[in-house]
Length: 83
Image (cartoon, rainbow, N blue to C red):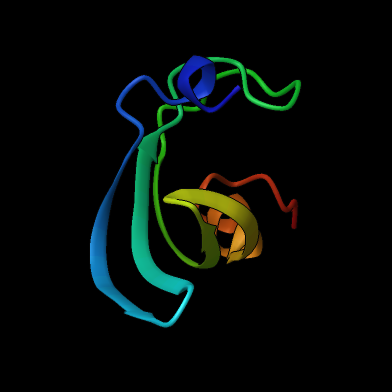
């Protein structure tokens, strides 16, 4: 869904650290709305938002994931909030 709506979708890792069986990452997510996304036609607008994720690792694989992404900031930058 993200690649269809944002052909240049990507992210930059700001912080990455681990403790015991947990890994945490703070990333900046970016893209240009050049395709349909969540039923909305392309606007040509760009966005940059922050995502924070914590992963629990078991046997070298991700066993659980908890994450938060600032969707409100993304939608505001894309002009999808109205007003």
